[in-house]
Image (tube, rainbow, N blue to C red; front, side, top):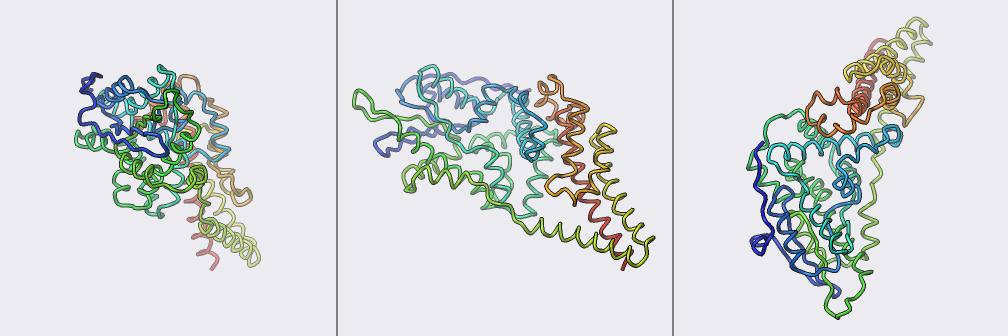
Length: 413
């Protein structure tokens, strides 16, 4: 692992660091643009906190990300059953994969992404200053990004995330330099963000607006100074957000609470994919019914095809995930019955059986970030294997439905 020499805090630490000062509503916002993978940014944060008096310190973090920085083993508290029941499996998996991307950088260059944010939080605590967590939650950002792009771009995003797990090559130094000028989420999706205006808007522009609104909201309750001097807030932000945030602080007119509420909303998913899937299943079952009407043996054959193909491919997904034999059985039974329990994926049934039979140990949570950084770890770690079981069973079920539908329709008509 290539180590990076730590930069020292001192008077020169702020030289050539992106820094903007903007005044609004008699509050001076000192916006320090940082690099999420740069020791120099850590030194700059420590220096500016030591040399200027601030009434509050704001960081580009949401409460969940701040908690994970304070406690890197926060995944220990994850309730897998609740994750599956609440339909958050995809979001948890995406967060884990982003975490593995961070770990690759840390292992390769000796840099822990977000160290400058941790330095800002420690500085606020040491000086007894209010700490403002002004970023939007990662889950909301990912949901809105997923909603705002087309089907092909969604497949590209999913493929890019999976590719980051299986890619064992070193991150080139030039990419590290680019990361120093970007937001971490933008860096993880750099290829797509640069080509997709909707994706850029969700990952960057919306968050600029959101963070500016949160700053204004928090500043409204900031008490005046006893000495009558203008109040001052330090904002530690990724360099890629600096210009957009400063512009939003200057120009925003909408009430901050209302704007935050709008940007926190998760758009309702499009209904046509569900209606299309439902229409396909209804057509298949109508065809099976018609087959029974024409000839009971033909109907029996069509029903057998439905059960064997949907159940068989779902069970194959569970086997590929290294699932327990009863998880495989659960997948086989649940998949053909999917139309009769809308909203409950067959992958959820199988994954919950897997989690119940092979309960994750404390060691699995302890090593989760390390294990998922290599593709073999997804089968070795019990937590990751439950997530893998969910996705592979769901994929097998969907494939089985389409293949079964084709065979049934072609055999009856």
